[in-house]
Length: 377
Ligand SMILES: [Mg+2]
Image (tube, rainbow, N blue to C red; front, side, top):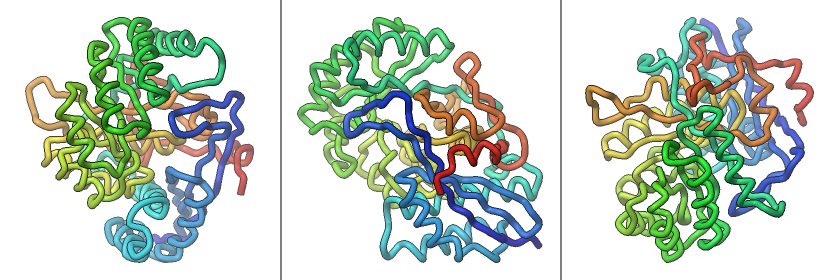
């Protein structure tokens, strides 16, 4: 029997050429904590955590001794061991992201040990490619922002994307103008989602939602504080736009609150934060029982994208029908060589779809030579 020999956490970072903003903050650097698990027989698996990279790294270093020396095939048991060691201090947040990073790496290891892609280990491949939406249209401080947003949106449509997501959350009036310009730029044939990153109170969110209903919005993401479960339910009652949230939610217990309160139409667990593939598979099953759609949040490197693709290949979409509905992949399009360069194959959408890797594990290889270029510690 093979055993886990090493769990290494490493921060990789890239200083952006152009700073960009969303409703809460700005980004001038992209950084992430990667996790490399190596077995005694030399099998290597990769994962990553979503959240402040240095803090996630500390979490992985805290948890690593719990899995070193253990059988990597004991996925549920190892997850439970990490969870029980952290639950007293961290039922949400970056320590759960650290569990997620190790969990994803262990799925990669198991797939490689067994010679099967993770999607097969999850229960089977329902689809070989997944429709993707382009995440972009962040804010900048440059003049003429509304024109830039419209041009960027048009570029995604021209590249074949059938769905795109833009930022809102500046102010209700600016948002209405920006959304109108983007809708006009892409025409009626492209699905358009908006994301406020919890910028608004209920009154503002209702005002914005009603004003942009005529632009046929696919979903309104994180309109309100992630703590305001009741507010989400009331907003759902007051707009025809589907409501999405979950990138700030963790574990089954967190998503249960969203579902019980009827807070969302679309749940967005991040595989690298909410508890890993092990936990998000369960969250997806719970969502189905509550009649909630699942569209995982994904904003990391090619490792995170590969993990999302493996889950989406396997994921059920309820209710069944002859012409089945499909889940959708979030594909960040902002400047990020950590996403574009670190793994092969690169995820290049064709006709707005991305192929699900069929190689063992997550189905991607990390370019360790390039890793040195971005590695901080
Ligand atoms: Mg979001």
